[in-house]
Length: 91
Image (cartoon, rainbow, N blue to C red):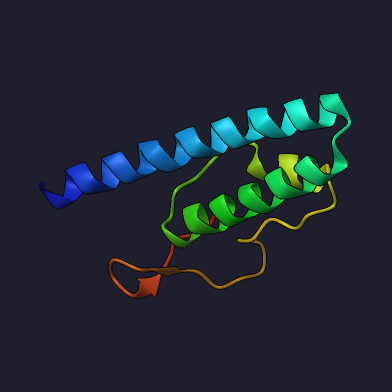
């Protein structure tokens, strides 16, 4: 599989997983399950870090995490594009 296809597939997969985890977080919160909220927040934070490490931008992730007092993993952390070992572009 060409590198470009791998990148597109990875981006789509991580974005889908983040969307699914956000939905599961909302469901846990609605159910009042504090333990499951913590589990889903941990998952979401890990996925956000993985996305940031690979330069995948996910809209609204900072706001979702901030609503629970969790710092966005990419804020203040120098990122490196693991493909090129160069500093990742940040905006």
